[in-house]
Length: 258
Image (cartoon, rainbow, N blue to C red; front, side):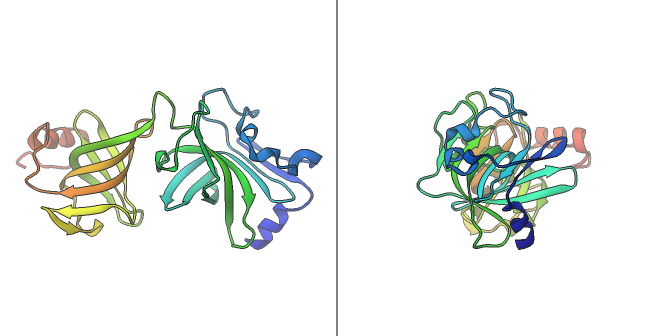
């Protein structure tokens, strides 16, 4: 990986764009620091105003970084994990947040780190952290294209039934009446209870009835869980029987006699 980074830091800016790769010479202004302000997140050749931008990665010879169109795969503390993917080629990014890091949404309105959730599309700029292996960026500005005025992240409590569990990613799918499938992402800070007693992610089972509270991204139907409550006695707004019927008609999860 260090060899890869050294290649990036040569006298060129490598620009990855959806549909091709282009190599461009460095302009004197490429490392003047101007790409660390909001202009670095402005209109690019693959962007449409107020829409999610095309994929693009730029790394200057002094380590200035600009990434557009990355997909958030995790948020832990002050580090955002994201990936840029072209077919089977993936670049994994660790985006480090500091007190000076600015957060905006697509309309350039100020947001916070708490508004960014798994599944969001983000752009960011800053400087490459060459003290660690891998692609790690000390972010100056992060723009969340999914946190728009019409589809912002907001606190929610959802009731539903577990239809899938991914232990490796600490996530699960919740079938919610009136919404459908919601991808729930948990973290080390998510609290779990089962019938009022402390529990862990490992207590989840297919068919469990849950109440989940957290930040819901309406655009991606993804919820970053703050708390998860497991209870067979939980009363939900739509009866458990009707939800099972809905699940069975869509995925055949439950037998007719359940």
